[in-house]
Length: 71
Image (cartoon, rainbow, N blue to C red):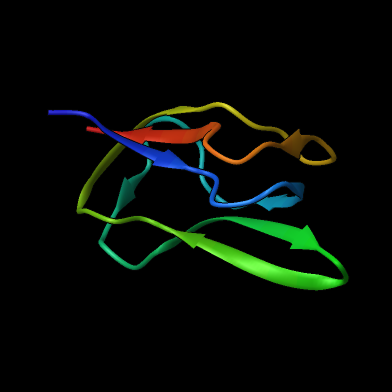
């Protein structure tokens, strides 16, 4: 069952730390967002394999946007 990892706020994508096919454990940082000069890590909510990364460094996410999908 796939798990969508969604943005919790409007932010800039500062750093993407995973690629599709990467194995992740719950709590691993997938992406680092930047908002108001603060770095916000986005962590994997479950163990699994990253099936897609829907953001790129330098991009912007809106609240609710799917950042990545974990199978």
